[in-house]
Image (cartoon, rainbow, N blue to C red; front, side, top):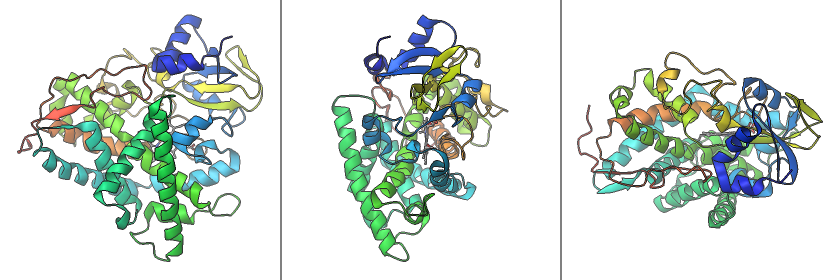
Length: 413
Ligand code: HEM
């Protein structure tokens, strides 16, 4: 069987659905990165994939992904007791209801402040504006020392955090930009960690920086400063990545203007349902991957130990066996009901504390539920622009970044 790495790079989100169509029903057999690979989808496959007896993460992620998106030594690469001890740090920081509320309030305040500025400008690109306001909010919340939060550093940090996500799945200039961004910010945050450890009461408060600096791994040892910086960035970067979903939300509202009025009413059940549907409908993480811990068999397909197991997140979120009219944007599918644990998987599946499921889902939903109604209330125009979302590009976004113009001085009630 041919190695499909170049097809993946060339076809992006269309690669797995295309292979699945050609191979018919069941798991997709292929080769990737020189290894035999099996791509699975569906709630039962999610449970199979997140069983450590089947799939391990150590050495699963290729160097280009670690040097851009996640960082070397990140929680994503650990298994067993080492993973659980590191994951506990993220779960305690990111799933605490008061902490999530505090961050969300900061995001709302930063948005309201930004709107005042947008009213003075003929037009703004939502992608760039949202990435900046989320960077400001998360740095304040995380306790990044104020001295390291001046406006030009904030813009540079926002652009670097975006670049790390934007350049992980390509071989061109975007990838080099992502590597530079990671190097620069790891150095910078390693210094922040060292300063925090030197000062008994850390400047700028406690919060995430202090917790990461003080964290001890399963072996009882603190993280070296570089790994601590990697994990600090594993809070800052994905929070800023909510920019992608916010801009997709703007796209969805533009295409479905009949939802605007209801979405604007924050207390309605619609904002949360809308947030779920944005996460389901729009393409962001295509799949997640690990290595077979032992020879595996799934629905008649076999994979040797060390083979690649892919969980097809985008495919599962558009599987007609799970979703009626999967290519229709319809938030009503989530009004009055929360999706099943292993059904909606834009941020992985399974259990959060014990497995590799994203610990940032509460934050993602809370931030979207805060921003999407604000977007619906924003009195603005959407000038002619290229709003196509190319499926070949991973990660993708509306080509224009979603430009809004004539933001009104008076925000409608
Ligand atoms: C923008 C929205 C987000 C998306 C699409 C997303 C997606 C994902 C995915 C697909 C995984 C991997 C799951 C797996 O391998 O099984 C993951 C893991 C992770 N995410 Fe998120 N995420 C988002 C937001 C967040 C936020 C806001 C945070 C933190 C503030 C966060 C922190 C993490 C961490 C630390 C992991 C590693 C978990 C582990 O390996 O145990 N993510 N995320």
